[in-house]
Image (cartoon, rainbow, N blue to C red; front, side, top):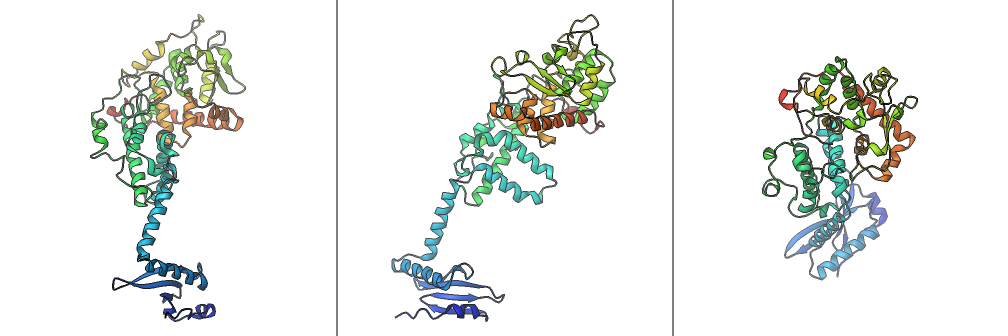
Length: 425
C-alpha cells in the first residue's frame, strides 16, 4: 500500500536543505542549492526510473501537486508514459497555435529577435517596409502554418502597381523581390524552429523556387521608363539647377512633386493654391488604373517648388508657358534630360521610380503615403484618412524631406553602371 501525504504545507514552506522530500506516490518536493523549490514526479517504466517536473511551488500548491501526481499515476495504470503524453500534448498545442499565429506576427517577433545583431535601426525599418509593401497584403494575416508555395509565388508574381499593364514584381524589381523572398524564407524558418509550422520551407530557393522562377541573374532588365538611382539624384539636381530654361524649371518641378509629364505641362495656373502651399490636379487630368480617377490629386508643395511657381510668368493660363502663352511641349523636358549626360535612355517618368525607391529604401514613410504621392490607386478608406488635416501634414513633411534630399550635397560613390534602373512606379 502506498504511503502518501507525508508532507504538510508548513513543512514545504520551512524546507531549506537542498534535496528531495518524498510525499508519497512518486511526488517529491525538490529544493535546489539556490533555495528554489519545485515539484517532481518519479516513476518506473520498463524497469527504468524516470522523472518529470510538475512546476514550481509558487505556481502549484501542495494539494494541486498531489492532484497532478495522481493524474500521472492514472496514465501509468493505463500503460501510458507520462513524459510521452506530455510531449504529445505540447506538439498538439503548438499545432493549434500555428493555426492562430499569423505570418505578420511571426515577422515582427523575428525582427525583434534579430535587431540586436543588425548594424543599425534602419536595417530593421527596411525589413518592415519591404514586408509591409510586398508580403503582408497577401500573407500577413494568414496563419504562418498555412503559408504555401503558391502563396509565396503570389507574393513574388504580384503586379508592381495598380496600373492595368503593370509588370510582375519578380521580373520588374528582381533585386527587391529576391530580398523579399529571402526574408520570407528566414521568417518561415524561424517559425518552423518554434514549432509554429511544419514541413519544408516554401520560400527556399535551392531545390524549390529555382525550378519555378527565373534566376535573378538571368532576368533581363525592364527596358522602358529608365530611371536615375536615387543616390545619383543630388548630383543630377545640382546640374539641373544650373540650367536656366523653362524646360529645366518644369523638369525640376516635376521631380519635386513626383508627378507625370502631362500633369506638369498641362497644369493650369488656377490649380495652384499659394496660400495653402499646394497643387490640386483635377481628376479629369489624372491617369488611373482603368481610365480616369474619381477624385482630384492634392500635392503639397515644398519651399523650392513654391519658389519655382513664383518665378514663372504670371500672364499665362498655363503654369509652364512660353512668353507667347503656349504651354511647354510634351518633349521639352525629355530632350533636356537626355542631353544632360546622365544617360540617353533616361525618362522623365522614371523619376517617379526614383522617388518611390527613395521612400522605400531610405525612409520609414508608410507605403500608402508614397502611393498617394504618385496618384496611384489606394482604397477609399486610406485616401480619406490621408485627406484629413493631420495626415495631410505628414504628406507635406514627406515631400519637404524629398525636396531636401534633392538639394543635398551630391555623393560621388554611385558608379556609372548603377545609374540606370527600371521603373518601380
